[in-house]
Amino acid sequence: GKILAVDPKYDFVVLDIGDDQGVKERGEMMVNRQGKLIGKVRISSVQKDRCVATILPAWKRGEVMEGDQVIY
Image (cartoon, rainbow, N blue to C red; front, side, top):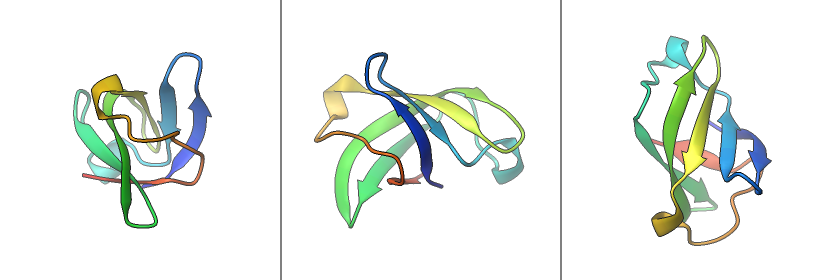
């Protein structure tokens, strides 16, 4: 999936994947940009075709940006 939106103030992101793709609440995903690990997110709410995830501070390696990839 991909990151659609980022809220740096509250450290959350909106992803373009959801229930239809098998995303589960409380699941964790790696954020990846050009083969580099940027951070890790935990899914906080899931809808049919998108979900909201919180950026985990302990895993933050850089600024998470729109368009970054997420992998399970």
